[in-house]
Length: 209
Length: 209
Image (cartoon, rainbow over all chains, first blue to last red):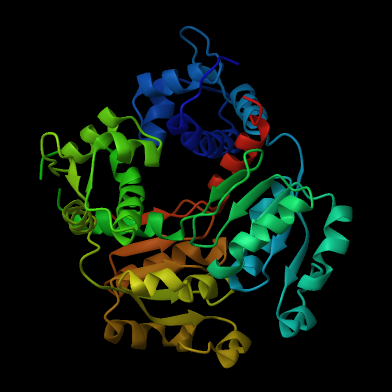
């Protein structure tokens, strides 16, 4: 893999993965940068630059092998290995994440959820264990989780992050609308639910253009 | 506003809005492209290009007025006017969206939810009306909603989109993991829940770099 990959390229990778998966399921074996660009709303030269920058290769005059390129991207993205998530907060967002149908298919297994509300713990979930927050220290070390999903209210997010870090988890997917202080050897990606809604209002506002 | 604004710029606008809101609440009044770039992980020239392309202006040697620039971006994004959402599907995702704390603050009011499961309708929600799917035709025209949130299972998403279109709604925020056929005068933004999770696994995979 070549050295530096820009954030913009990284942010586009999931869309490459999605489009290549769709192409594969449509039975397409080869695709040119022109065709892939039309599908993804990018220029052919942008497509070639992006793929080149992650070290992927096409064939002169034949374009890209769909399956090979998708496998290469999945490998680059760390999606060719399974991941185990532990979900902190079994409220509406935690439950939505734990039951999102695509995650399991993509290799993301939810090991369990934790919640501070005894009623939520008692109610449980159809398919997954919901534990009391008091059991976090005892249970997380044995759960084999590499990703913590932070789905607690904003005011509890920092202490939750600090606790899972202390328990050895080094990656977090944060749904709490707050900027967290993150230890240097931890990676955190924040989900901004509003962002795509704001893109929608932009498009509503510029419909006539 | 200058003519063509690229998709990449549009996709970055919510991050500008967020960062400027934070700066405002920190009491910052002026910011240079250098400082804003450091905060957002962009180069100063990228910042200047982005803001220039939407028609925003800075002052030579003084940078940008935080409040003015944020108001300008909010106006460009259509966020300076209220929006009313109707949510189709009161399952985990519909409920999570309807209770997301930031939306109300940002001017997004949920007018109501609809669901096909009588149990879900009977259970309702603490704060919002949940109606039976049979009442959609009767109720939606009076709800004043300009955005339909599609939070139904993938197999019901297309008929739901077609129905809200027929009832006069021209904008949809789609959570169903499916590509919809969209009428020419409708705008749809798809939420890909997995994308930021995949960016997390990329970062986990390239931690040492």
